[in-house]
Length: 423
Ligand SMILES: [Zn+2]
Image (cartoon, rainbow, N blue to C red; front, top):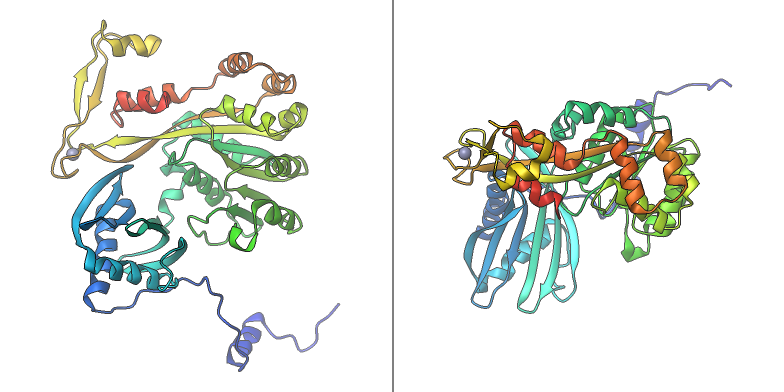
């Protein structure tokens, strides 16, 4: 078929731009913050700026009986920044935050959520806002979402050389399910985005279903769950299955129906990534079986599992080495990984880390590849002990072993590794 008087898409789009027809702007478009010098505006901008400087992940603005409090979450821990916010000013601060995300400032009895973009000289970030009424006023939590994308590179996910090779192998599978597991705040989403970033290419249709969308990725079709209009995971999944997709990512498998669709779609020629809230690779298999997946289907659908945790990163400028004594409790706990003369590292504190001794976080992981022996084991629905034994035979380095390696390299404290592994 030949098209006559063929106009380029650019010409058509330019003509459409010049036409007088207007369409209402979608309400979820984030607002850009313009320079405005009223004191409350300046104050809220400063709250966000300071959080960026301190590398905080979240900002908490909380009401109190006498005074309000401002806290930042830095490296996973909440720290009080200011606890004398005058209560007569408090509601103005909350109103300003609501205006930034186009929320209803008159509504102060119901929870609201929204987002805005924040731009300063060298950075542009998305901020996700949640407002919840407490008994003495509204509390706002702002999550800072860095959209620079640099940290999504697979090299920045802290994988060991061995685990990185396994993870890349999983990303290159033509079809099947890859599960990323861990508790809340274990960096699952970052790892998921790492995979999508790696696979992102114009020849592929990559679709995500998330609740909520944490980072916006150029070139990837992200759908956000919206329970307010009864748009849930199941509805979106059903619709997305007809969207000619190559790669699907599900931002948390919570229901039996979603887990069934996950398996179905990975068995029909698609690569599906999903995150699940469980503590280890073995438990992922059990969770999916408990959700009603038939063992033999799971065995063929599942390609691999990444389980992970985040551990505080030692400040490289001030951490100090110490000798681990052979008769110490630590040496006993390390078992075969201990050899006499071993040095490990602990925090101290310097100007560069503001006396904390830690700076950022490091992920520790285990990556399980499902081989034919594990497939056989899964399809027989074994008791958990037997499955754990089979996983041990699969020559997987456990999270604890990965953590020991990272402690030996001076990246983390061994006690922190032990703490998160026993959670
Ligand atoms: Zn330091």
